[in-house]
Image 1 (tube, one colour):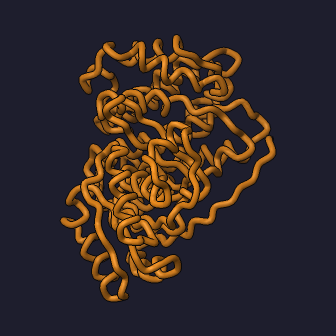
Image 2: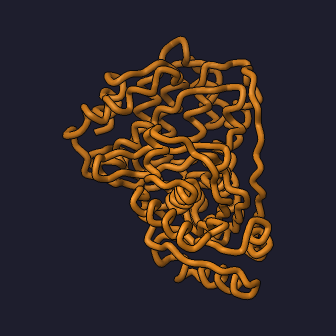
Length: 386
């Protein structure tokens, strides 16, 4: 196991009625808020009214930035940062899923910076002072409510990339499973695929001494496999929604990677797909993950696939490791298909037009993946996914 430092300062309020903690959470950091959200769903569901009522009753001033895109644009984040400067905002409050939370993080990073937020992504500038971030989560997926990263898109150049820093981790996150009851079957499935991908990308690593981290991963995966289908079929099943929501947070808050670092790979590929085609992130992952697993499989690393197959999926442990590995990949594909997720890029209107440039971009940062990969590997995975 490698050396590491682990610290999660995010305060979590979890459960029914957790939003009642919002006023005190805000006042700990300030009294002027930028409320960030996407479309009108939080208004239809009454979450917006609840939050506004609590802020008004407690004398909290707020302005709004609505219309955050599913793959949030840097222009939207820059507009939010400008509002923060103009209104002396002290706290950024995000209500929504991963895109809204990521946009809010980018805004919080840009609120005390004179240039575009894309400077942080490109490396032109380092993140300095960040406004406190509070989130109210409405979708179990990205885990942005407890992690240190934000992904934004520069559509004009077909770039989707991240900014990261310890102060991008939210100060407080409010997780009420009932707020996810209205999530569509499509988004429930895509969100579950996102969580599974987060865990698989760190579970398959080259640090066999990190036994406990592997067990954490297996626990989160087993939870997703059990409750993903239940939430898909029974959207108002509180137990299922609660377990998925909590799994999303722990899949990517660093617990599973400390002492067992590994280079992310599927997310790098999917970001290229989203940057060119603006598809749902979890859908892109659902298509790519099985092909990525198949591409990486070797006799010498089949033991890890066998652990996944036996410990998570319950495959017969007496079988040959390679046999278990292939059955495990097949079982994952079957699971995702049972939630009506696409299994090919063709199904979502993607062809080979941009494969070469996508592979070039994604392949640059994969030297530390489970098996070192490059442009040719990415290209092979994309073609296998058609």
